[in-house]
Image 1 (cartoon, chains in turn red, blue):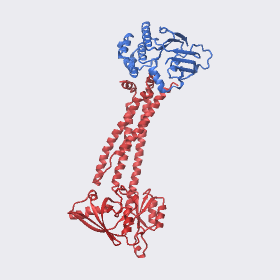
Image 2 (cartoon, helix red, strand yellow):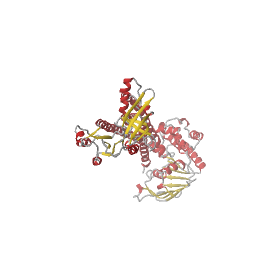
Image 3 (tube, chains in turn blue, purple):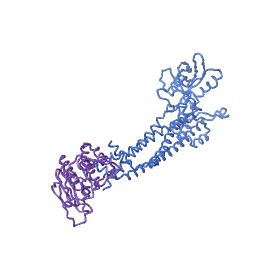
Image 4 (cartoon, one colour):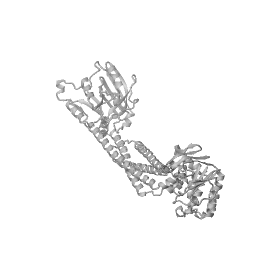
Length: 401
Length: 214
């Protein structure tokens, strides 16, 4: 009742067109910001089917030319070459691939329909380049379980080539992850059997990856002699994959990298820039609309200043007098956020439907990050509004001075 | 609050005038709770300024104003709000009513804040002042004399130690002025409060402790 009377007083002179103008302008701004955040997150999920490696990693090797075999020139990287590369300022950090110096045989059999047996090899990279939870990517000496990351190509080869041709069932990553690979390791007069646990498939790495710790131990155990070979491939993290210096540096030295991966990184990078620009536009629209709102509220306070002053004089505190306008602005902000989230969800459903045509088993992230951004914006803007309105009322309180 | 003291108080605008002859400006004056005072003044002698200084919405004076010995110049917003809600009631010369609201709502907006007077009491005052039929009339549609009576009722809807009435009967006939005087005195006595009335001619008849010439 008390608030009702005050509201009856203070709603005089409210300009509906001004508030509608603010509402839609701010709605556009907030929708753009939320969609930007959400779209970027969703896109990242597409891009990072390969969750084991960040997009900014490049794999570098030396070109194998027609002559290198004859001249005997090495295709390994010497210590000096690695150090030189490490000194370039586009390189964040660098790691070497360690190949296995022993024989590996793997057997994969699922009773009834699949039965593979093959010779293969292992490689390892420093663990901090592998983006798997550390407990899943850990090898303890003496354990006969080895975590393994396989190239995604292997799975595709089976599913779209082998299984298709033979009428065998197709396998998903999930099913394979639950199965064991029987691994036989031989060398240095030893022979042991291990269980390979597939922790995932990588489309970035064309190799069979095991933890560095296992590799070090196994090379010591099974290798015949010179275990410490120079690496043939390097993995490096770069700060900006679109940097032209990377391409020219690699060309100058006849190094090769996975070009298309470089392109993919470039796409991601460009997309990130575009999304950032779009979001900045959204932020600018929002700021301008909030500016309209504040002007509108200030005008309202000005028009109702004698009422506000009288309320203060009959004993209402500035906080109580400010409350209706603060509630009005915060209420509008909340309404904008709710509607913006709804619009974002609708738009997202439309683009996700398009995504799904290309990536049927796409797992998209939730909308929590976008919601958080929205709520944080709401809180910041609301605090700003509350302070501004209170300041305006205080100026009425002090006007008589 | 028991005592209001003015110590050499003088509005800044009178600063350079030497011809001020006043019982209040530039004097030591004390108003005590429970007593009634009349401040008589001519136009332009600073009557409304006096009210606004004591009510804390203007501070353009020199000298000191003390409440119970405490200088009011450093009072916080919260303290002033509390004083206006619980210690001083003021009937403004310019009334400061809300023309958009009805007479009843104008009183309610104050009484809801303090929760002090019973509805029955308020209705009784409306009845005594002969404006019961105006309860639901918009304030803006009422005559100044009628508004003055509503304003008095509103000013009584709170606990107070002092009641300031700034030319309360300027637009009232003698009968209504007398009724208003009775209501004010009764409420002040009930609360043990003091009354400070001002006038520029016709003044309300109360048992004044002292009459000041501003």
